[in-house]
Length: 205
Image (cartoon, rainbow, N blue to C red; front, side, top):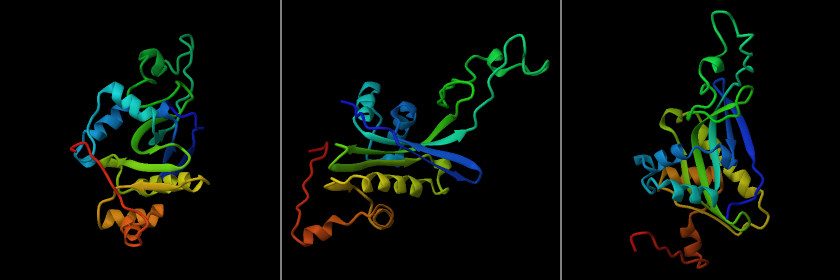
């Protein structure tokens, strides 16, 4: 069953480009997510059939990252085109405001181009498993990944009954990144203390 949690959002501007992070599933591009799953960058995942992907996303906390395009002015009527030489774009092409690349509600609404996402598997109260973090290659090196994880941390810090947050990180830089930016701790330390014994089963078992 899909969560009824209230959507949250964060905004920042980098090099004069505004970006939005939102937990609103209505903004998520399923094609973008599935293309990411099918890429070499997300070696732990794979592209999914549309119905399966829809089920995955609706049962997760997904934080979409978007480049915000400024709203276009409302189109003028056919009797009052924008100018004699440049009629309103909506009169020339009704699909102008509704391309697959951008999300929005027509004239006057922001256009959102998805450029990344993070996904938690969670009960929204006690357990959060950060399973996916992705930023499109052309948007890397701008600090979006670090900002995304900072927003993930705000989610975790806002949960008074949180029992455990988990993720699988690559050794070295990945481990250090999540320790610093998400406050994670190497579970080997808890194993050494005798507090936990991790167990797992993957799809190959």
